[in-house]
Length: 380
Image (cartoon, rainbow, N blue to C red; front, top):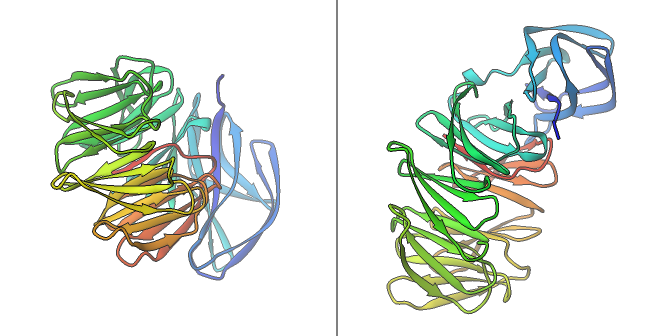
């Protein structure tokens, strides 16, 4: 089913504590009733007002009966996505186009339901714009100033310009499409839509290798520290290890339970046990395990900065990798994606919010609005 082109309208404030009431917005003879007052907060200065289906060209927008001319005319082609920003400064309104070219550091995320890729300015933590796709985007990765996008039930990876999102080329892949992509050491690791095939694509050589699984896997992790790929199926305690180079099986670690998610570093493998509601640290050196019990069952586990980040239905919990003691807890429900950028952690929630957390202080710097659920994200 074709999705119409999308126009996302955001309002943003230059000063904390400012407010403005939006009654109606009119674009191309479409009138949208808003009747809402927006107020800038310490952590949220940008808000999603609405999304509308649109076609053709627009060069102006009418807000509360007053016409505002856009700096640049927007031409909507099939399945394109764009944003307009209403900027509030001293209670005066200005309208701006999205300017992806001006953003050097980007955080990108896929919104499958809208056939759209969202872009956040990593420095400010604010939405910078959107990129429309012809197919349903699922996996996404960045390498060498290019965006690699995989699609549900479509056997290609699209290559887009990181600067502006323009299409460059397509890479055919085996299988039935993509559900996730990871990027490491000039390779793409592409999990197929049915989760039974992991493709290793060498970007420089254009060569593909595939790992075929007898059953669906629930998670995989590219461990740069050991040059291995870790996979789990969610039903058993088997953690399989494969070579990052050619996909050959190296070995298997067996932990009693139902391991739903996995990650690791140079010394340990960290696993989330869905059955016993625990996280497990398995030492690659001593071949022994330590266990930490959770109140709620874990859904996803990732290690970063000597901490183990564990997602449950209602929380994000960071544990110390050495002791497994809880280090920090964030009350965020329905987390769909985590992105670790070095100095910041981007957390996407199914509630329509994303959170930007300082990786050192764990202070939540920014809260923002997303139009619908995010599947996967990446950054440059």
